[in-house]
Image 1: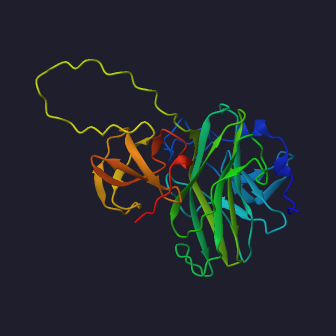
Image 2: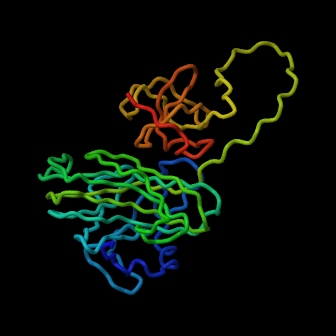
Image 3: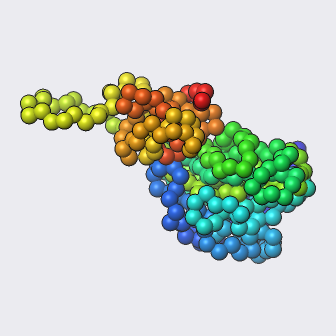
Length: 319
């Protein structure tokens, strides 16, 4: 039987959620449809969180628009403004000391279109350490993190309707986690979930630059080309080879890199929105292997619009 979960956050509070904060002006990580989240950059003032029944927990300082959840059978985390920032001036951090937890954040929106595919992504930083240097994890607690979408708009992270990304484990770096789901109503709920395996001194998670938006549909079929008109020759600009009918394409806004890393050498600069053929993706969903101007390279997967659902792209090994 599942451990008991704090029930207060399960109470309907839709009007309150809409009122909690305006959307941040910081740029979103994923470039699909408009960002549907309130305060996706976790900016603004952090104040003690108040549950719909009026209960206030002093150690819960939550960014406007977001809500905490935690497994009451384990240690309750503390929430505070983050020590780390992916973009902008703030991030949301939560942590336990000498204990494990199963906890995170959630937000519900009501402006989705049923039948459309949506992507939730968020930058995550994990510091888990038996020592005190906040930038170095020493003997970490095996912290597992993932993100999810409930396409029915439910607000329990334990519901069978939640679609989750695979668990990831990493430390002392920002990494973007994402997941896609097809909306089953006009409401969607996004979740962040973390659970350390060992009760080390510090088990800290920071979140920044969240995004929830519609995945771009496949491009409409092109019309037959009109008869060519002969003109004086001009210097030829590069054009991408025509993709096969079943090929997956994306329109990135990122450089083409030799390796699947922000430190990878830049092979070329892809014009913003130029369609390229997608050959594969990394297992952690952060990088896409594409073909551009006769060469293959890597682009950040969240900086593009795809012709199909991201999970349809095959996983390939990254150098």
